[in-house]
Image (cartoon, rainbow, N blue to C red; front, side):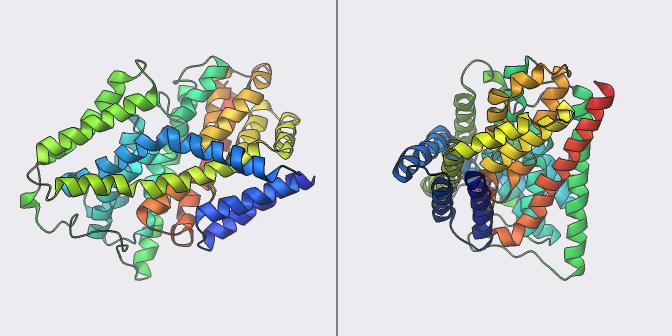
Length: 435
């Protein structure tokens, strides 16, 4: 019981510290220490092996993705390509629909297979331009990007190449298009409920006299909409994005997914340079800045993953697993609760889903429930409590956009936690009545 309480206290403390502005590295180390002491663990082994292994796993696995993703976003901004695409989107939808435009742009990229972390770097410059033009508070960009990057394309949409949609298939014998009707209905709910909420908050912000205010690291001179005559044609600007998505699809199944995405990004960066060499004021500086900008986001996310590894390796974590297996609800309800609890503890949708499927997936498969329904409910459920304030993805988004939890998490939490929990309930209802 002390160990279980220690895990819960550690999660509460790390959330509190994040809100109070603590850096995630000291916060994750301190809270890992709470978990270790309350579980009577070996401090040195847990920190030097479990925490460090988690840190190394994430930093080593995603280093190239972070660097290439940040560099792609940098050259898209420095070349004026991001500006050009933003002009076209505003011409098509209007400045008043900035929230819809950013949510759609993010959704297209993530459904096309572009990694969440890459999308953050790529879409952020576009969002800055659109929100400045619409004079909406910058804090709402986080929730808007969250709609497209952290909800339906990640968990609900049939055929999505996201890891959260592929993990259940490996255990349940299903495919990425499992339970298509359930997935489409929940996807529509997740997207439009998220857009409605953020647009409603935008209206309230304007009524309260809030305006767009750039952060200290936002170089608005480079991404302003002052003069579009020097920008590349929108079709030229959009070509590298299409090439990145196209290469990802072309290489899918032919090599490791991360390797394929890395190649796609490298091709996109090279093409952006070739098409815009004369427009990039200092190509070498763009290269250096893009690579440098990825480092802190990578380190901070790796730190929270290290904390998650410590939690996974203490005895109390098994108590949570036994609790989930012992629930006497409908299997879809028990599954949704179990996935959410584990994803919430680890701060990771893919981490929570992987642990659930490895430890409990076969038992749930024997319950007699349609495997496709189990697949889709598990996938959608993984996108709920995974986005609590200590989530690595949340921390990365806030780091990249230069915002604090206090400024932006409330709206992001509604979009990526509350609404997905409602979508999970909707998925369960559909699963019970239709499957």
